[in-house]
Length: 311
Image (cartoon, rainbow, N blue to C red):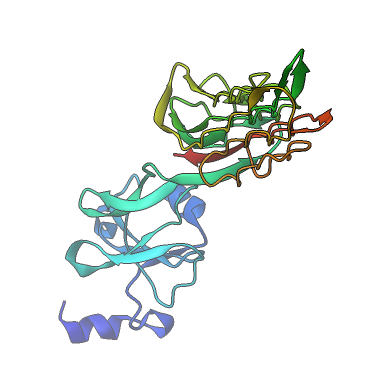
């Protein structure tokens, strides 16, 4: 049939319309029937999303081959497929990213990426979010309290500064979305007491700082790594100051508290009650001596935790 004969055979709305069939939606298109061999490779317009489909078998079997413009489906994408024909890519499901499928644009599973961030300054149960397979966790244990000053017979001793909590950066793997994890934030120790440990389930633990009663300096906490947990780095701590032990009486400052890196400033010891720690995971200052009195150490500060969920 020549082009002029073909155009003369069209009537009304058929003129310059490239499709032979119209359907309201996919269900109506799939339910259609009574096709014959002469209908093969004709086009159908699906009205709900303006997609164009080619009949490839009378059963029927349809192949999407393009889209009619203007195109208004929210979230769908258009790209040029085989033979330069515009093809519609429906909106992707949650967790999918745009990639290559058989050389053409398509939705694929998302690779490792940040799903969300959880900040904790108090203990609580945390649910592993959908899609999370691992977590990068930054933990700080609780700081110890400063040691109390004391008098022992002819000896006067100002207290040593409290140790700070461990600052641990670790990776927890093989997480299961929906699982509930107990996340504990280490509480700062009172005077003469150790700080509490901060833990992310059984995966990662940053121990609290310790207090050594008397003049010796406190000890900073250590990391504890469980199954499916990996230490990436730890430390970042200052050294707590020691107190002074002398025979006889006098006015002496307590030792300084220790502080994890960038978590707070060092609590400075004085001749009086030890300064309270500030920030997170810092040790309190030791108690001082000032004739005729001795003073208690300052309290340590609580730890913290930052969880970066990874897909």
